[in-house]
Structure formats: structure tokens, C-alpha cells
Length: 506
Image 1 (cartoon, rainbow, N blue to C red):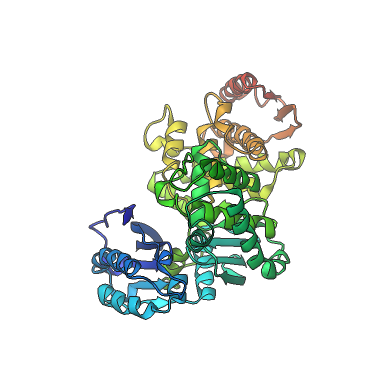
Image 2: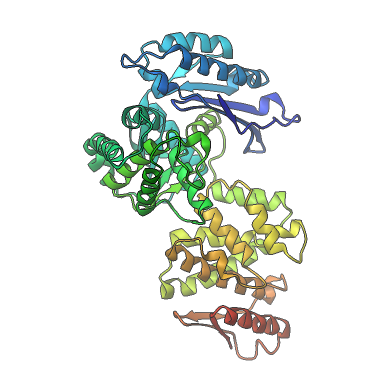
């Protein structure tokens, strides 16, 4: 049994502040422990074990003894952690395999003895609802959102708006059950992929029109296969959403490896190797049937939904705002100046948005966050604080932002001063790359214009641009009477010139 990602609970946490959610999935068993402090939720411990419960189902839907033992052994690890948490603050659920298993009661009876807590097997719709809530609490949704979670034995598809799931289904197809059906001999062939994809499509077709009719604005993948694919893309130097052409390329990489034991793709972890082709086949079917153009990774899923469901008295404020406020407070960023830079950046953004055809929904959240966190690295030191800030953002959880948005924010912070490195943008999709370069130019100018850190000293300006040149115009004589900013802008003009960007300041 493979135990992963185990952390130690902080000794100062008070029992009444601790909550735990346990998700007994068909592929993995997960436990997350959080501490609630000052209205914020902080993860302080995670345990994950690959149990692959669904692999123990025989043709009569009976779990074999080996899979029962794997599950119980995992729960003995969980049980020790749960002893320190008040019983009302614990929620334990079982999902698809325990819904399907004819002898689920055998597993559940022993599990409840081990855990000293009731285990609820939730139906597919409730699982889908909890997944959506976990995604919604940790991601800032814009308009209707399509949420997809590929589990070991079931796949949940949900469309919702903000905190409200609107339409949801749970289907009996998952990466473990599809592996046992289409890749059981360990061979990875074009035909095996085609059989898996076509079967998944046949299950999706009856519900596809219902989801397409909602005209959702973004698609979010919750953990599992989407997360594994994102890790592969990042390892291979691609900072982008999941797109269908990437999925087909990964399918070819799998086929080239011939067998599952020989499956070797940069960024694919050993723990996901066996079920990766089957999960990939399901995701390809979802993309093609639901006409998904791109998928972002969400910050949460079922476990987060269970946690926040126990905290229904918490204030439902904007998750992004709360995240930025917490980081500003934690790293002693001067909040007044952070807002000053943000406001200047947004003013410039509004002046160039239509001229450059920028997508406000995609660009504005990244620009706001980067502006407010541009001085994050000063927590370490001033001279290289843009680099220190980017480093901190590489490891800092940012609730309310997708993984690609966090990568964009990190790149903006890294690029907001000193030399401009175009290599920092190379891993992004061309559309995203171009937008980030525009946001970088805006942020650099905003930081220069606010250099004296006083609102009443800010200049009135007009920013006009085309694809070739940016022109920043001030009131007559203003630059001459502010030699510091004039000198900074002259240097900035040179920095941009070195990478082929044209800037004029009048």
C-alpha cells in the first residue's frame, strides 16, 4: 500500500478548532484535517493512500478479501489522527464502490469499529453536489461553470453558478473500473483507447445536450486525472489549461509505451501510472462530447465540500479578496500601497483593454493579485524582491484562483521590475502569453508612477496603444517637474526597448 503526502498536525491547534473530512473513494482514500481560525480555513494535515477498492470488485460486484483488508489497514492509519478531533467535527463518506458492492455492509461494519464513527455511503447526486461545493468554495466562479470529477468508479459532471449547483449527474465510469475493463491485460493500444473512449461517449450522449444548453463560461477539473495531466504539462514546460490537442498527444505517448509497466511520461507519478490511460480516455470522451475547449484545475473537490458543509455558519465573502487580505497580513505588505498600485493598474487596464482586445474576466483577477502582491518578496529583502515574491507564490496556496492564474500572477510579480525576461512567458499558450506581457507592461508602469507612495502625488495620465507602440501622456510640464519619475520612465523605456517593446512618455 502506497502512503503519500503525510503532514504533522500543528501542536498549538485547539480541538474545537479542528475539523476532518474522510473520503473513501474507489481509487484512493483521503483524509484532510483543517484548523479554523479568525474565519479562515487552514489545511494542517493530509493523508492519502492508494487503496484501489474498485479493483477488488468481481463480476458479481463482490469485494474480495484483499481489497477489504487494504481499506481497513488504511483506516487504522486514519483512526489515530481522528482521535484528537471532536466527533461532531468529523465527516466520513463512502462513494461509488461502496454504492456498488454487494458486500459493502461487511466493509462498513468493520470500518465503523476501526474509526469509532459512523460512515455514510452517499449517493451519486449527493457526491456530485459536495464536489461542486468544494470546487465553488475554493475557486472563484464566473458565470455558469462546468465541473468534472473523474473518480475510480464514477464520474461526476455538474454545472452551477457561484455556490449553487444547477444540474448534476453521477455516472458509473471511472479510471479503475475502465482499467479493469479496457486495459486489464496491461497493454496500451490504439484499439483499447478507442474502445474506452467510445464506451464513455455512449454513457455521456444521453446527458450531453442538457449540459451544453447551459452555455457555461468555464470548465473546472477536480483532482484525479485532470490534476495528473496538469502536473505532466508543467513538468514538460507547458503552463496552460488542459486542451484536447494535449490529451491526444498524451494518448499517443501512452500508446508508444506499449504496456502499463513500461508507461514512462515525464511528470506522471508512479502512483497514477496504472490508471492513467483509462482516466485519459474518459477525459477525451468528456472533451469531445461536451465540446470543452479548455479545462482549469480547481482548488478543491469532495473533501473540501464536506469540510465547508460543516462550517455553514462561516461568512460567504469573496474567496479571492480573502486570500489577498490574508497574504498581505501574513507577509506584512503595506496594504495602502498595494491598493494604490492596484488602482493605477486597473486605470491603465481600462484604457488599453478595448484597444488590445483583452479578456477582462481572464486578465483582471491576475492583474489585481499581482499588483497587490508585487511587494510580497520584500518580506525577505528589497534588492531581488520580485524574484523572492515569485518564489513564495510557487508554494503559497491561493484559494479562489486556478492553477494557471497562480502561474500567471507569479510571472507578473517576477517580471514587474528590473530586466524583462521573455523566457518567463514561453511556457504559456500564445493567447495567455500575449495577455501576460500586456499586464506586465501595465504593472511595471503602475509601480513606477506610484514610487513616492502618496496618493496626492499621483499624476493624471492618458495611455494609448496599438500593437507596435505604447504612448503615456502627462499634463504639460509634469514630467519636467518630477525628475525622479522622469528618470525611472526613461530607464523603463530602455528596458522595454531591449525586448522589442516600444514606449513613449510625453
